[in-house]
Length: 265
Image (cartoon, rainbow, N blue to C red; front, side, top):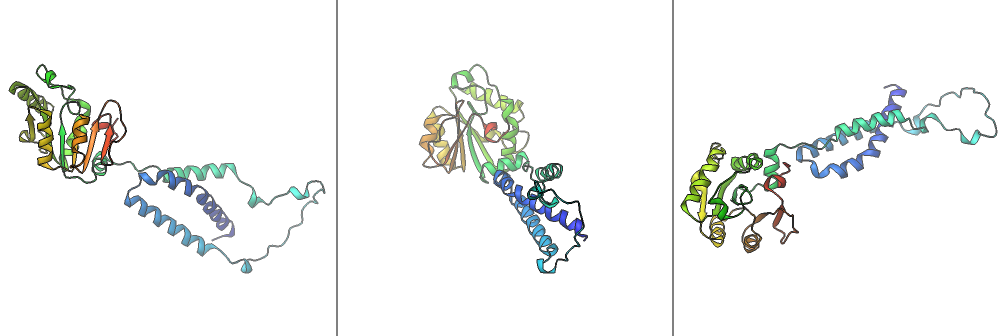
């Protein structure tokens, strides 16, 4: 490698080192194991190449000193070598290359769901305020509306989790309306959720009893009292609330919606 190319490469190494620490600290939390391995491999390759290219100072050839115009005594102490002068254009180009390489890894929705649920395999979830627009059993007697924004996330969860939906209802007619609304929304078409896994009860405590019997890895609910009661028995819980509250326990997470918890809004 020519001396000029070697100097350019070493100069690039120095600039990469200057930006590397900041980029790693900002983006580390977005990287999965494959990305970490790729960065480690890159760092090893750069270090190995740098060591090969580095020439011991004792073996460096002295370049003949070229005569130049005499420097005035007033500014002779301020003259710097070209190697010490930063080139803004090169700095900008190097920054662009590094920024492009260290772009945050964009995960698929499937990967996000698996990551956020910590590979949980069984999930229980109430309907009111989470899957449905309605927020009370009384409203279900009049109409049932499935939230369109939650469908993609819910269907993704059903692909690798055993999902049970449950709700308190006041009559059999409400049950039929709920099942019909879920069916029309396409929730049963993916094969991950069947009608037999939509459970109904007459009281809030009945829903709590369902959850304890099923022993899920995750329970999703919009009632803070139910969440509090189950916090001692369920591994993880997600409390859905229009106003994001502080976490009441280390195993209880909060979000304004199910899709917001998975970063879909």
